[in-house]
Length: 369
Image 1: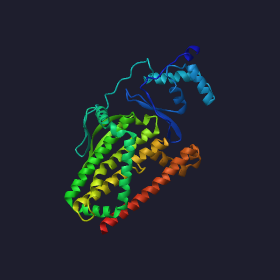
Image 2: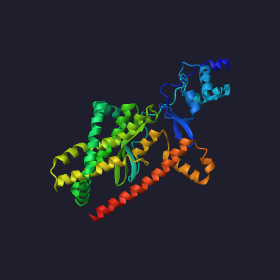
Image 3: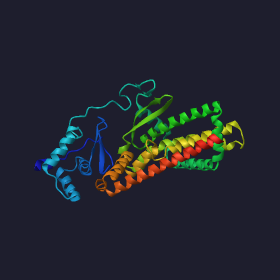
Image 4: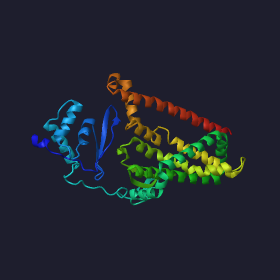
């Protein structure tokens, strides 16, 4: 036992550990090996131990820290079980190297699915492509520049909100004119592509990686996608929020030159002004709707990161069903979990009803105008 406690094992330096995440009634940490791609969950006590395996502290020193925090000492069997688990997953430095997975975005066939539904990988190495884009755009990612752009977007949305009547009338006009409607649809598709690239560039900026860039379709709809890897493991919450919010921010930035163009035109029935007004309404709706905290929207992802919760919607639904069926079992949830899950279940239901009422009103307005 003394020999075992003298050991100073270390995790491989590339192994990722996530911050604490609420998952149902439990708090978990995610562990991922980016070389093999394998990942699993551990509890707070296991995380306390694993996060201290840095090669400088002996198991005896870590065990002493553990005893002070959790009020119990670890036996030889506990250490052997933990080290065996980490060793079997090839997470310990000095052990066998893990079997590597192909570089991000290079595994599997580029074309998957059928003519009606599928995906097409567009670049061989999405992470390298995004890294090049990030280097080119890095001057624009300075906090002062981003702050100025954000103020510009807020000013734009304020002016557009005050002109909502004109925008709504322009949208109804657009639906009756195929040529400008096609132009607006094309611009909105480009905005969607920028939305996806923005997630990847933001991830690269704060230390995340990009797994794949491609085209996904469910005919007649086809959209770009950008798969962001590993940003769940970023230490800072604001970095995770920035990655999730980057898409909506890019949508608003895309509208800025069109807003300036629209504002420079004289008020009236000019077709160009009407087309721009409709574009600004649809584009603003695209960006702002994405911030709504309902799955699968970016706002839902942001809320999960902000609250440090994983699977918020299904966990809330599960808690609500349990609460209706067995209040004693539901009371076993930690107080924070009970508040979050009940609050999200009630709030999301109210939000869905509000959105349904708003959509009904918008359809009625378009039909009667």
